[in-house]
Image 1 (cartoon, rainbow, N blue to C red):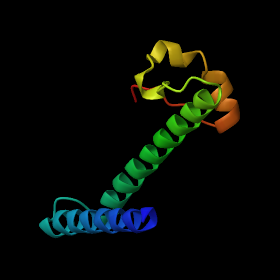
Image 2: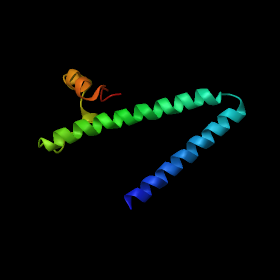
Image 3: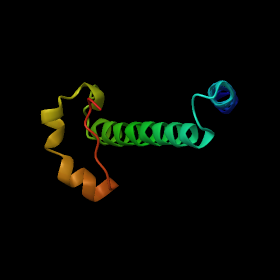
Image 4: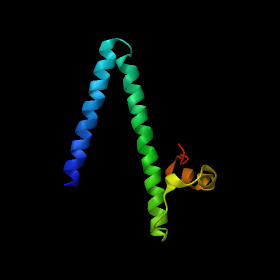
Length: 97
């Protein structure tokens, strides 16, 4: 059931992106290459943002802090883990970002 829903969401996202690209390119306002770069960059940023949030939350939950949510943490509190996360994951994103 979850795989079917995921496939439906992926198909809807693909359709929305395709329609937006078609509208922008045909209207002459945006070059197809520029649109592709923007969309792929945005999707990648969202992926790594969700990835680091999930990684941190899973670690905290496993340590017994079941109510922890990285997105609710202040940037100042999150900064304390920057060096370790960059070493472990290769990147770091503040909760506000």
